[in-house]
Structures are given as structure tokens and as C-alpha cells.
Amino acid sequence: MKLYSTNNKDLRVSFKEAVFNSLPQDRGLYMPEVIPSLDPLFIKNIHQYSLQEIAFTVASALIGDDIPAVDLKKIVEDAINFDAPVKFLDPETAVLELFHGPSYAFKDFGARFMSRVMGYFSKQGDKLLDVLVATSGDTGGAVALGFLGVEGTRVTILYPKGKVSKVQEEQLTTNGKNIRALEVEGTFDDCQALVKQAFNDTELNRELRLTSANSINIARLIPQTFYYFWAYAQLKAQGVDEVVFTVPSGNFGNIGAGLLAYKMGLPVKHFVAGTNVNDTVPRFLASGAYDPKPSVQTLANAMDVGNPSNWVRIQDLFDNDLDKLRNMISSYTYNDEQTKAGMRELFEKYRYVACPHTAIAYLASQAYKEEYPGQYASVFLSTAHPCKFPDGIDADIFEHVVYPEGAKELAGKPKLAEPLQVDYEMFKDYLTEK
Image (cartoon, rainbow, N blue to C red; front, side):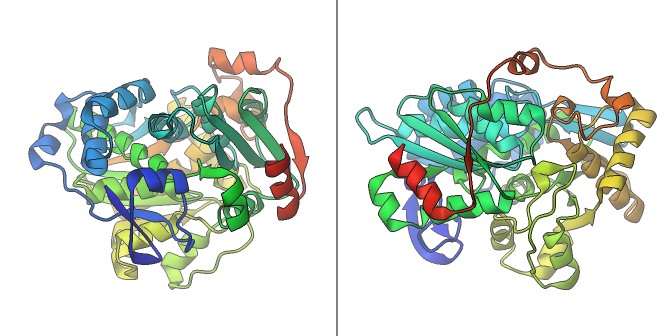
């Protein structure tokens, strides 16, 4: 597998190099040189395969010989050891639940796969691998649990103070061992900017072996394609052929993976991006002007991203052609009041308890359905378990949440986090001195 930078298509690196470097020096993002088309016969019979078999087939097509088949199969089976079920709420509306992994969020797919890939490529005696990650909520927990105890790695997670939920913070800050948490006096965008600056610091990269666990890393993006193929397999088993996926979108890695799956041959009618008031992409699709603004805090905190990194990948997939993007992606934006109304509608109409992100996806799916009626399955993605959002869900609804066993155990553990100002030199000193 060879990859290029979105800023320089003449650049070519190996999959291993892209995984460990995360970002090209020109500040683009890595993309596959060739997007493989899956065998149409595989797609036709996809409902006959398990999630792990589908994941292995997709990963093999993308990664090629960079990881031998026998080793890649072990990585997939170890990393993707939980389900992602499609549940129909009514005959035309379904939810794809992506919170059945250890951190109760869709990011378990990417974080667990990436940690195993990095472990595979790391050799005994190699320099310690410093994994940096900025999180607006769920990424940090997934990365922490994915890398916890992985030999030869040290993870530093930056999260915005007061802008993640209690359960999210507990997943970030109670691990110890090789997992460190920095509580940043700022926004997610500030956290992400610090991480990006570290990767572009030549002096720091000479001293430390840095890599990223954010969705900017190609090893995070690849496994997120798996659940789109798996969702389609489940739908096909029920006689459904046409599907529209609606994705709650913040940094746009999740929907980016879906669009990559589409480019590989997954039959998808359309994609819908649901956002909160951090609406840089919806405004771009409407006007053609890309005008990022500072992020605003909302109930759907994992989507509080003012300048989504992965949007450049999506533009690259569609040759930076605005008409092509508009033809395949629609977008709708919701404020906190509307998000709360969406959670209540889901509960009252279907007795389904959803997190704020999921409610935004539901609302966007309904808006698209109303604007473009037709005979297709409208599948919206549920990206996190509602137990992670006690302050964002009305009490009379939240009391119906059934906590996973692991979430209860977190509450009694001490918080292990250090404060950090939005100051790159302070961050650099922390990394080099500790």
C-alpha cells in the first residue's frame, strides 16, 4: 500500500511510514495511492460473511502485502471482537449501534485496530513510541483503552477542561500505566493545534518518536470502513438494497470512512452529515466558501470542531469538485434545543434512549427523508452509549439508561490528569521532560 499527501500527490510513503508519521511534513493528510474496488461478487454475497470476515477482506484490499494475510487476520480478530448491530425502529428507519466496544463509542474500531497495527510494526528495542491524541470526548477513551498496556508505547491525551462528560473524563484519566492525560484550558481545536504543532516540530521529532492516534492517522480511518460494509450486510440479509447513511459529524473522520467504503464499491445511495452549531462544512456545501470558525461548546461535545481535519480527505476523494460533493453529501445543522427535542422524540416515539450525537444524526436522517422521500433504508449512526452523557439527556429519559458494567467501575477510580495552558512551549516541555 502506497500513500500520498493531500498537499502533494507526488509524495509516496509505505503504510508503515504513514501509520507512524501520521502527518506528512507538508501538513497534508495521507491518502491511498489507489482505492481498490472490491469484487462485485463479494458485495453481492456480503450478507453471508461475518463482521470479522468482512473486515479482513476490506483491510486486505487496502493494506495489501504490507501486513501478511495471516498476521492481518489475527489483528482483525483481536481488535474487532464486538458487534455493531443494525436495529430497525420502524420499517424504513434503522440505527447502527457502534457503542458495543470497551469504551462504548464508535472509535473503538479505529483505536483498537491502530494499536495492534502499531504493535505489529514496532520491533523490540525500538525507541519508545509517543502517541499523541487530542479529544473532544470519545476518541481519548477509545485510544486509552486500545493502547493500555501495549509494550513500547506511551500515550498522551489532551482534552478541553470542562467540555467532556463525567464518564468520558473517567475513561481518559483513570488508567495510569502508559496512559497520560492533560486537561487543557481551552477548546478541542486548541488541543488539536498543539498536537499538530508537535508533529511539525523538527527538533521535537528528532528527540521523540511521535505518532498520532487521532482520525488523521490512516490506521484509524481504515477500520471505520468495516462497520459500513457490515451494516450493509445486515440490511441485505433482510432484503434491503438501497441505503442512506446519516452520520453525526465533527472532525468528519467517520463519514470520511463511509465515503471511502463507497469508493471501494459499497452500494450507498447517499450520505447525510448531521452537525451541531459548529457548521463549517454545511456552510461550505451551501456557499462554496470554506470559512472555519472557533469551535462552540454544545451538548454533542464530541462534535465541537470548528475546523474539521478530515474534510480535506473527503474533498480529495471527490477531486475537490464541489458539485460531486453536493451530489453525494447533504448536511443539516442543529442547536442544543433541537438536539434535546430529537432525544425526546426518539424516546417517546420508539422508547429509544440516544446520546446527543445520535439524536442529531436521527434529526438529519428525518430531514433528508422529508426532503427526498423514497424507498430506501434510512440508517443513522449511534456513535456513543447514552450513559456517557448524564448532563446532556433529560433526567426522565436518562433514568431509563442501562449502564454497562465497566462504566460503573470507573466512578470509584482516582483522576490522574495534569493541567495545561494553551501554550505550545509548555506542552513541548512536558513531553521532553517527562
